Amino acid sequence: MSQASDMVRTEFKKGDDIRDAGLTTPEDIIRYDDIVYGEDPKWQSLDVYRPKSAEGKKLPVIVSVHGGGWVYGDKERYQFYCMNLAQRGFAVVNYTYRLAPEYKYPSSLEDTNSVFTWILAHGGEYGFDTAHIFGVGDSAGGHNLGLYAGICTNPQYAAGYGFKTPEGFAPTAIGLHCGAHRIEIGQEGNTDDLTQRLMADFLPEKGTEKELELIDVTKHITEKYPPTFFMTCPGDFLKNQAPLLAEQLAEKNVPFMYRMYGSGQKPLAHVFHCDIKSEDAKLCNYEVCDFFKRYL
Image (tube, rainbow, N blue to C red):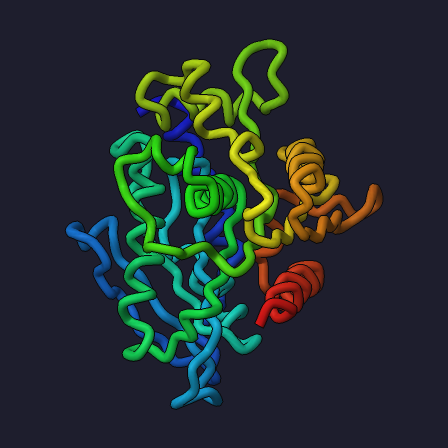
């Protein structure tokens, strides 16, 4: 493992522990934990959260793809954020996926596909409205979800992968928060140094031109791409990525909402929306859910 990946796993965990200190499962949420969706219970498990008030009702689904620089994170780190989304009238699926460097690209995308496939197969059991399945992802999770949406809607791009998405399926709409959308390596690249170094752990060939083109979300958007909510903030080290996505969505006439939260006086920080104690996070999470409800 590289020094970059080791640093991310150590420092991100410290920050997440501070962020979530004192939080517990809300009384109005019912949760189903540690459901295995693949062959490896350590890496391939998920939770389902639902509002208790919706017992017996089918609910639209939000799938959360956690961030963590492609090398860190699991469903435990996103449980409180995801339950906050569930309180807004959704069934939320929060999952752990295989990480680099133990598992290289496209393992995490394969797991994302397995989760969406699992949801379609278990709609009756968990009260999923499988006609309305949304996705949210932040940072590297936004990158994962952005690529997966491209695989679902661009047959030419999908042909380059060794797995098949569910026939006729694409997310109803997606939310990409503080995402990495186009990764460029080298002195002329637009990507921060840490992200560039993490590519050596994430990509099998450490970031060849062909690999970087394959994982460029913006290159695989078509007019069939799902409606997209995406956001950033002045304190986000990936803030320069958002305009790249906006340009391509506009060019392909894909409906989208682009939000910049915070200000120069209040810059906020990368993935601030996960801190559910924050009023800014509450606003962001309200707005992405409101965006999704337009497509019900």
